[in-house]
Amino acid sequence: MPDTSKKQQDFSRILLKWNREENTRQMPWKGEKDPYKVWLSEIILQQTRVEQGLSYYNNFIKTFPDVDRLAKAPEEKVFKLWEGLGYYSRCRNLISSAKYISKELKGKFPDTYEDIKALKGVGPYTAAAISSFVFNLPHAVVDGNVFRVLARIFGIDTPIDSTEGKKKFTALADSLLDRKQPGLYNQAIMDFGAVICKPAPLCDQCVFKSDCYAFKRNKINELPVKEKKLRIKKRWFYYLVMEHEGEIAVRQRTGKDIWQQLYEFPLVEMEKEELVDAILPEAEKKQLLKNKNYRVVAVSSSYKQQLSHQVITGMFIEIKLTKKPALKDGWIWLSKNKLKKLAFPRFINYYLESKQ
Image (cartoon, rainbow, N blue to C red):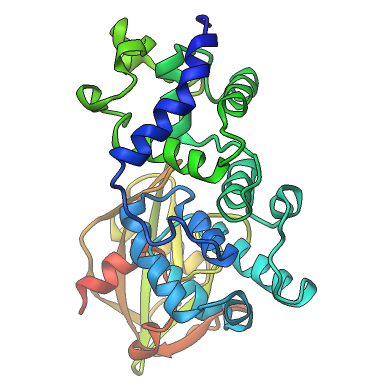
């Protein structure tokens, strides 16, 4: 790692000057001192771009203006509002923490770093963000934007997803933090990474370019370094849209697989892409269908959804039933209008939107 002593002395001053004079990035939670709103924004923005999360944040604040309203809301209503954001464990953690704060803490949001970090779904980054933004506590944030800024400017090639890398970046971030105004500093470095030192950076607008390690050595595209390559799993989902006298069978997904607590149609998962003629016998084996009690009326085109670690491909087979099958526990039969109130995975919503 290159010598960083002088850069460290100047970094905070230059960054805050840029923030004061050039940073025009606007977000509704920026400068917010209500811990509920900051917490909500940070949970939404985990694994989500600001542009996508903005409307969700506004809808949540409008529907649930405080933590008590969120805690008392029916879980299905919360999931429906979250629908389309993905990473639904965030929503489950949001509900769990809201109930804990409302009931156990009498609606008072935790005000120390450790107590905030103890909330479900809150890690070191989120705890640092909330504690510094709201309570002005001296904890440095280290997210993707910060990794990128520090790796490029200070020339750190230690993988950001390694134990050593996390320790090194956390120590550097902490040493750079302006302890008199940690919230302002943290927001500034995150904004700088979001609008200037982006994956494809605007180096001509960068206030650090004269002393940026990566810029001077033409290593912009090499930093930061990641150690692990993401392995993508491919899955094939074939949904049976089974209708009997105007009602359709659905159930809530349980277990620890993807889309937990969202609703779905009867599913046949295959190991590779298959035709309908191969799907129906499997459905009968699983006792989802009974021979001679149904007919296929339509087959959708192929749909695909890319998740962080999986690609889901498949289609929807529309089936008219002459008799309801004796499905196992958990299945309910609803009219098409009532389906609109349930939260479905984006993969299923692609299909439902095509039927409108």
